[in-house]
Image (cartoon, rainbow, N blue to C red):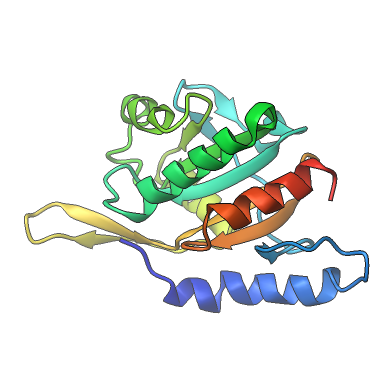
Length: 199
């Protein structure tokens, strides 16, 4: 499950403002995704990967980093997004090794390291699942201005509503782009190539 309402009023408003102030030059790259260069978010991430190793964004300097928040019980948006990113990495050929996909769980209660280790690399062996306790998860979501909320299910279980979109950082660790869910792999592929070329 996912929600776009709060995403539109929080993340996209911030991103649009950043685009208007930071990307108006004649030599600005012709991105297909939302250019969020200069937005005051996505500067830090302190979680563990599915192998138990503490991770920060600095670990991935030199690579284009895709950050997607979701959960393994997600029936549609999350697997679709991860499959799309896997296809993009494949189409990049050798340059695919210069891209790191990070799947940040918003459901640490069920998404244990063991679960993430089975789920995330099934899309691509290089993808990493990131997790933390409830406090660390909330802190990571706030840093990216991401909404998520547990929703009770009729069977007594629960699902998690969450903002749907992917953030992209360049090789210097700067947040550059935001892809709304459904924008498509072609646009992502195009823009990652620009970032890899130094845009």
